[in-house]
Amino acid sequence: MTQTRAASLIAVLTALLAVLLTPVPASAASLQEVTGFGTNPGALKMYRYVPDGLPAGRPVVVALHGCTQNASGYGTGSGWLQLADRWGFSVVLPQQQAANNSSACFNWFQTGDIQRGQGEAASVAQMVDRQLADTGGDASRVYVTGLSAGGGMTAVMMAAYPEKFAAGGVVAGLPHGCAQAAGSPYVCMYVGATQTPKQWGDRVRAARPGYTGPWPVLTVFQGSADYTVKPVNMTDLMRQWTDVHGADQTADVSDTVAGYPHQVFRDPAGRPVVETYSLTGMGHGQPVDPGSGSEQCGTAGAYLLDVNLCAASRMSRAWGLS
Image (cartoon, rainbow, N blue to C red; front, side):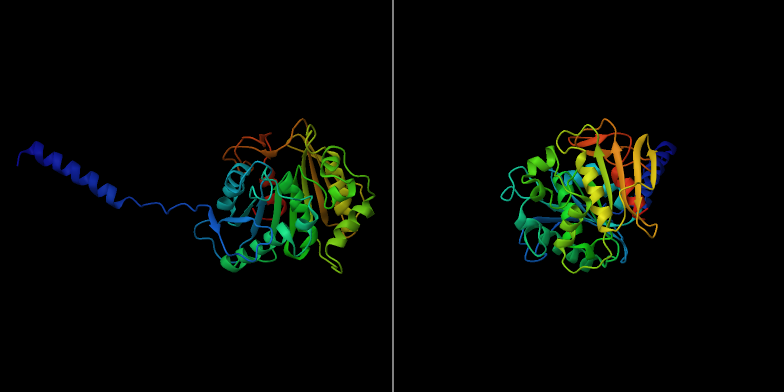
């Protein structure tokens, strides 16, 4: 064998050995549909994301998409799947079906879908139970959040199933019972409903008669230039949930986060129970901040607005997921 041929053969063998010895990365987790999760009276679809190797005892986040969106697009665009990998929790992603709502909106305004044990609210609750059973998740660390109609349904879940959720995050959404209080979902969205804090709180208490707590704590994100869901709805969410927690409507903290007005409301024991972010100049959508920084997450797109603040990251930190 000539010296040149020998050298060539050694080079080939070396390259082949390098390929064989290079570790093959584990396959990345993917979104999976789950069927048979319960009686599913709201006829929703259930998707979930479980990071590879996730141990038992980890938190669960339920993320509800907005109108015209779907589970996959919202899970990725909002940043929740990215954060699940980063910080180690699983995500449940309910998906609306066209047969229920032609615009793919969750029916936060339909009486039959927002009462405990009925319709879409009951379907989402069954998804939580299935996820906890399958993953061995921590039942004391389950959180619910959503955008727009998904935000309205978030408030529904916090009211109708308060024992299931430690906290909720409403993004450009509505108070529980707003459509009924205003007489129309559109009046609620565009004008708001005239209710005192106690009247707002009574709507939550009526959703779970006899419940003595603890109630979920609330974080709200709202664009100041949102003409689809007017900013008064964030004020009414604050009034509703401070009243539920026995707190007043005077902020205990008023500062800025990423340049945006931010307030915290505490209960008489000093515990933060409502937190609000007013995104100056932002329209209707989910705040995201694409990038790999520790506070960054999400992907910009329709109703996923790059405003240099990622709502999912802020919620994760408030809830201790990070």
